[in-house]
Image (cartoon, rainbow, N blue to C red; front, side, top):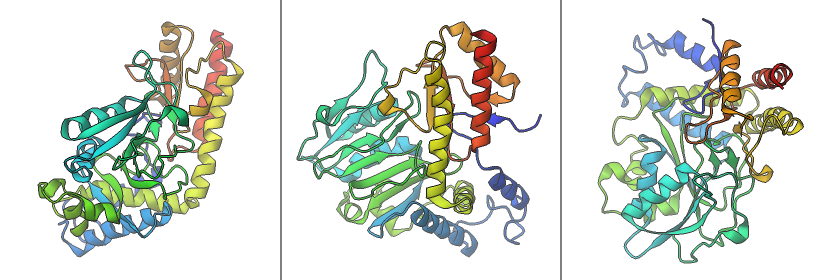
Length: 362
């Protein structure tokens, strides 16, 4: 079987050129006679690729000099705990905006270790199909930070512009849309993301944290949970996810090669429009439950008129080499995840399939 069109929400498709390069280097990386999975993380060869990965991310994502980039492990879920543990001392509080399953998990985890305030939620009967308006968000002025999630993979919502937190630093989970568009860094105290959507394979988590917050982080934590220790050790306090960082380096070089963030953002806008246009042209067949202003450019979600028709849609798509489009089990329906690695041709293939499916089953 040849390669399929892989639209899983994550881990997701990687650029083919990055995979091919890794395949060619698997047994002998940079003339060392070893795989990158076998070499010491203290070696000059690995430290070089580690440092270049950080430098590339700073360059491509326009990260200002007053931020530190950490490459950690444990996924975004570990950051749900590390953030309040590092940033909230006794007597301090943070505000949380809940717009989906993962932001709710972050909120529930933080409540176990610190004082947190629910600034807003858009939950309706366990579902989140819109983002809150500015006047619906009640951020405590005394908050050390305000946490939100930029893109919701399950429900298909995305902040197109971030809320005004009144000077309270934003802490943002960007796991599913990091490096997909330009951002204004000034409101952010910390941004974090699991790599497995836009940056590389699972196994490395990026944390971009303002340097003053690193210095203010609590000093009474175990070293493995301390941002300051990790920053002082250049994320090499313990053995890092060497292969994941190596692959992230290749993905970042690919982004650079296709024109950087400007090209990526324009491409992502065109891809999303291809699918939303089909949905909007046939609203009685493809049913979008997401408020238009909140629609994600990374995860396009919709329903068909019956569950039987949705099952047929998934089955027929698989027969044409299109996989990973079944909606999350908590929501059902269809979800097409069009991360950076998907080109417009892939998305055009899905849009064409959708139109043919209407002709056959409408």
